[in-house]
Image (cartoon, rainbow, N blue to C red):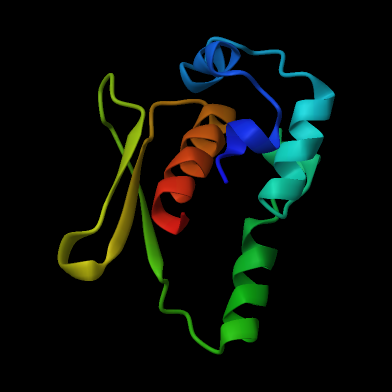
Length: 116
């Protein structure tokens, strides 16, 4: 199921979110996104850095540090990010010039492409 349906956002209302034109996302939408992506609203907003803890827990849970999906941050100019799968390996590239919050939104969108 697409995130826009999970958030109950109509298509025309979703475009400003994808273009990162909305900077004051309603708290109820942030809370729903946190549930969808199994994280916290604080993490989505960049208020806490739980990446190291999540990595440690994933390595412990799956008994490996070999990622199923590779995330790359690079200068992409005007492009926000993209997903590709060369030789069966899932790769997400996110523009390193975006704000941390924008990077999280783009990564979440590309994760949707990779997983769904």
